[in-house]
Amino acid sequence: MTLDALIKLLDKVIPPQQAAPSDCIETVSGSVTFFLDEEDGSSKNTGTSFASTIPAGADPNLYFQVNNPATTEYAVWKYDGCFFPLRGPARCDIILFSDVKIAFVELKLNATSLKNRAIKENRKKAISQLETSIQRLKGEFASSSVPWPFSETLANIAAPQHYPHFASKNAHAVKRFADDFNATLQEANPITFP
Figure 1 (cartoon, rainbow, N blue to C red):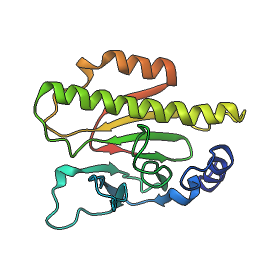
Figure 2: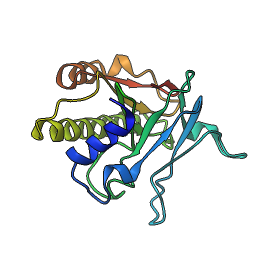
Figure 3: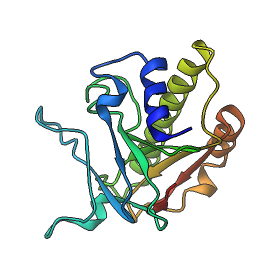
């Protein structure tokens, strides 16, 4: 299925929230794209922005990087802050998708605490946001009797570099995502997509 057909399918299957899905989806095909979570607690924030370069003087550690070596076109759905208002139930920040692959992404790069308890809570919240987002989308497809159009599902947490290794402490969540959603849960920055 083409990207245009998938975007039309999303409009058909997913009820509009603050906007229709297609109003919050853009396609990109650059070899590298950088994403910044602009949620800062103000009423003027716009959710997630993205560009092909990091602005001069900006902290590169705050950016989530997607490498696309084949420069294949893929879609970016600004899920939180465009499709949904920024304030509300927990959900992921962006959803990336191609004709066969979908990636739910939660950006936690602005987390600054070095305390284990805060890191654990931040990860727990990110996992919950990803889980809620996947459940919602898969549920909308199921309730519309439309087959899930993606052969590969990824749930990605983009966390600060100072966070300790993810997999060893979150094996139960990784297994749950695989069993319940047929999805790969990981913590990575950068990722290669699609």
